[in-house]
Image (cartoon, rainbow, N blue to C red; front, side, top):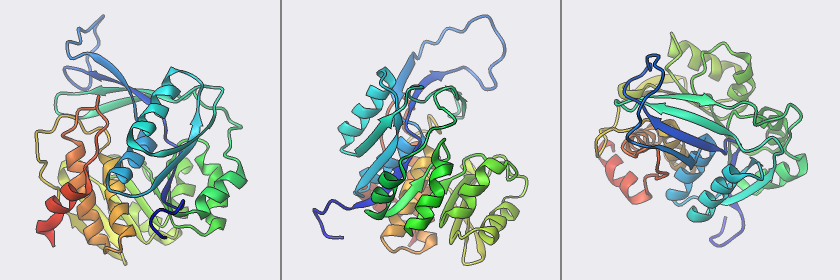
Length: 304
């Protein structure tokens, strides 16, 4: 690709929406008739696809985001977020409305997310020709697991473009996640719901086409499976106090992909991901802020 061309480094598919952030005194939250929230209740644009796109753009990658959005105030927030950060957005009409979620955030930064699944319709699809054109103009496509991205996988596979996906807290059994896991060249997931992360990671690699599988493990770092070898990725020390884990996995994925598209080996890519994920934990959920390229490279340098 030549500088100034219309080509895209990464096409992000799906995962656009709006979160309402509520800081609660503890998780799980004991039943009570009411709670006084003196930190405020804030609504801002940014779900998994938005945060991956923000992370990629902050690292200097040309990013395009494709999803369905409603003609509603929530959709306006998502559009404004992309304009503010200079990220190309193709927003197709979603009569059911823009995706919404409520995130309860505990004092230690852990979160509980409540997703509104009514903001989608069974027949939703991305137009095949549009998807094919955007994919072929991209070096890479990151596919979120939001509906209707599963139906897009055959078109993306036929286009021949490298794919990545994030399975989030997959338990290794839910069949909904399997088409994503087995179609992607790079697979991210959380180890939170896995009794045996290595077994699940190796199954992904054996049954699919993944060249790298990463299972993030919060304060315990991450696992990286590449070239048949499983290694531990040390946790990166945050540069500021941890306030919220929201978006940490998305930041990890964006920084890993930045390294991969730059030709770095998987171990360095994972180090980038760990640094970016740690940075995300220092950013309040009410803000959309990603680590920049200079800070990422500086903080990752000691591992080289």
